[in-house]
Amino acid sequence: MGKNLRFILLGIQACITLLLSAMIVQAMVSSVQQGLWMVTRTHLVPSLIHLWVALIAALLLCFLYRANIGAEARVLPLLFLMISLGNVKILPLYGSITHIILFSPSTIAALYHFSLLFGSFLFLASGLFQQTINPTKLGQYSFVGAASALLLSLLVPVSASSASFLWEASVTNPLFLGICLLINTLAILTFLIAMIEEQFSRQTTVRCLSFILMIAGNAMVTISQNTIFNTLGLFLYVAGTVILILATRTYHIWT
Image (cartoon, rainbow, N blue to C red):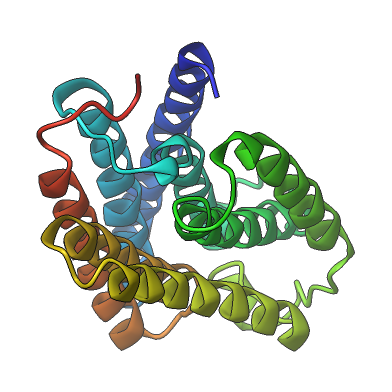
């Protein structure tokens, strides 16, 4: 992945973050006016925090910090983009509150499922390519992962008329949910194995721990609609991101 492409991805992520943030703020104002704030805040606030933590992390890693954290460094620009894109899940709620429909339910579902599955692929790639796979094949892996995620996201059955989908886009197909959870679990196991193989060296342990927290936290925020899971997931995700930034403060990540 060339430097120009990385900055293009960062620019796209920034645009997505600003656009979704504006929608979330508009939905917040409308929900307060309609007396729905106590209900909608559990959906809107986590997504807003999720968006900005991902963007701030991407900006810090790009411009202010120097990091050489292995082959997974090449994955981060695309990974943060997918994490941000996953927050299209709030568009059904935005449409319900503001009565502004920007995309059809099927389009929202496809974008949501694609970002979730491809993001899971990229988390797994972050662990695999630093351990057993030639980093030069990372581009091929990313292309295959993106193509597979896109195909599955278009084919997976979606219950867009379900009550839960009216609040947030969600995974309504058990098989697709199982695949996503399996990939995330494999990603966590990959980083645990890396820690063991490196005999829990400080640099490897901190790096792997940051990714494990990000994987678990992002999955809980992106998949679950439960307030407790969202809160815990947001805490884990922010903690993992902060640890990643602190662990990479002495090297340059996007060179």
